[in-house]
Amino acid sequence: MATTARLLAAVLAAAACAWLPAAAAFDVPTVAFDEGFSPLFGDGNLVRADDGRTARLLLDRRSGSGFISSDYYLHGFFSASIKLPRDYTAGVVVAFYLSNGDVYEKTHDELDFEFLGSRWGGQWRVQTNVYGNGSTSRGREERYLLPFDPTLEAHRYSILWAPTHIIFYVDDTPIREVVRHPAMGGDFPAKPMAVYATIWDGSAWATEGGKYKVNYKYAPFASDFSRLSLAGCPVADPSSSALLRLPRAGAGGGSGCDLLGLMTADYAVVTPQRRAAMRAFRARQMTYTVCYDAARYAAGPFPECDNSDEERRAFWAWGESRTVVMKTRGRGRRNRASRAAAAVAAGAAARGRTGMASS
Image (cartoon, rainbow, N blue to C red; front, side):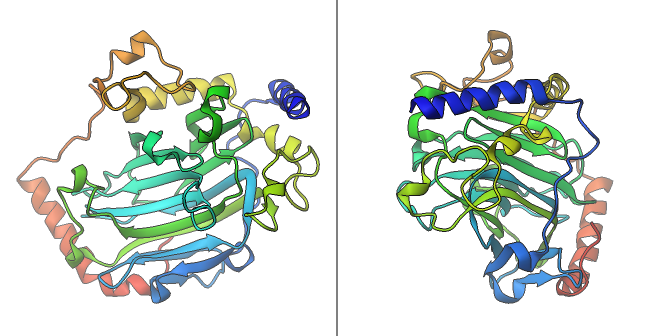
């Protein structure tokens, strides 16, 4: 434990000295689909582009679809550019996440981007989740609106998972940072995880608590994944207890992994500029945070929550924002235009399986 603590202290000290002003984009290599991923489910509902680097996931009456990384990783930076389905998408869930639920059924870890559809095209919500050691009963969820229409073009969504902290990014803006606190114990994800991308029917809960279901007359719902990055520490056996201790700097959890390099990379450090951008995003776009949910967690916020009395006043006692809410679209011409657009989309649905959308 003392050796681990010294390593973490050294890494954090190096990270504090290593940051540079944020670049326009992270310099992270991408992988071809067959080099890094395998189909998970959905058969013909997983469509790969001719370039070998882009995949389309479809949801229809038969099935959703998904793919999984070929390796498991113990820490890393994982990223995908995603274009979400258009028009009526209530009940639809698109997810990009890390998990080991198939290896550790009762004590699994998970880090999620979940995109939750709506009745109004383009108005998707995003939910981030942090679960460690089966801690779903102590879920650390947050939800946000997006400051752009995620159905018009692809945007990049990234997860940095290090031994000391987790960062969720939308494009190059951090939207959430979870710093490991000793009191978190096993609630901080610490076992090897695979990377997943899926689309599925979440009618039971995804849109207004399940009030609005998937309407398959708008199917197939198509989500495009491109610019896939797996900058992580691969492991040979995710169930081996020998891999659960912190990897040595320069050795990592598998061949070719440099843990110190990972933790001092540009994307692993929240610079003052990025922290300001993160605070601005959260103030304008966050609709729910577990850190202010006193109704669900009466004993108080989780130890990693960075709460303030001023910020607390912007949230109800159940964690929902008082000011950031999804604006419903009015009736009349706008709704008629939406229905017309939906009709066009339905007429083009047959083309969903051929020709990847540009991203």
